[in-house]
Image 1 (cartoon, rainbow, N blue to C red):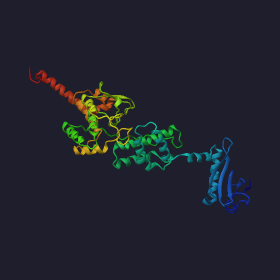
Image 2: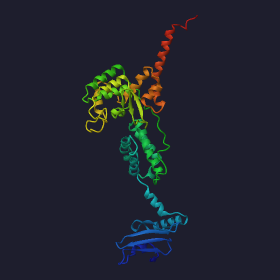
Image 3: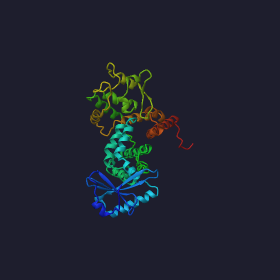
Image 4: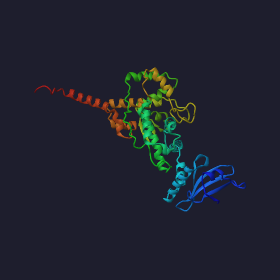
Length: 392
């Protein structure tokens, strides 16, 4: 452990003994206690500060390569680091902590691996992360992602023309990543830069319904579809108000014609529920040709053990043929609900049929219920046949 008066001249001429791969020259104390110049047989030279931490362990902090720093910079840095050590700090540990902070791409992969174990909508989460979040933040370390930058990015997303609901979904998923980082004690994840950014108010509800003429046009269009399963699928959606995923994955064993119910073992709310079936719905199901051993009402044409997962192209074609270009497949659920409310069914019962987790979701149809109530009082007034506005 040779000692020397370390300065610019010594560093320039220092040599490694021919029988060694490297040698450490320690400062005699004139510059800074613990300052070391490592000289290698290859000619490379590197400055270090070596010290003992608060637990008595030998530690080393790299200051920099000889060719990259003037000696004045080395001296100032070494003295600053030495002061931190004297005050109880640990520069090497701090540097290691900084290096341990992952990039968002690394955190995102852990987030997605976790989501895959329980999320039914994992594919949607993965798409949002891949398409919207990773391109902007993937290479950033967690400590470099700040709330002002995230707020501006989300505002830019909205200005790009993305739907408000899409921007909100991005915000929620991005924030969820940092919530998981905090839960898992990931370095750099002590704060959530998404938390505190206000959620933009928007109305995502849509009341597109169908009148009897539109339903008839749609019935004729789906009857002409090349997808022979489409008429039964669309018919069940309109007759039950079920979600399209619930109809496509319906199993024969869960259909009870006698009790007129369809069991959904796992709904969107995470619970099993029964969908009541009208006579028209049971007649429709009874007309479906069931192949021997078939598990699903609508089996996949490519996977004998699976069910149909999408009707996108057939639906788009039929929708165009029916001249209902603005109609989404999910609107059939709204149309079923609107028909029930308009027929005088109370909102609570409609919510139960649709499988709403809370009554607030059903209140979007309250204006239709009001029309029914007005019709009721009008009918009652006519029945009384009394004009109360005339003087007695």
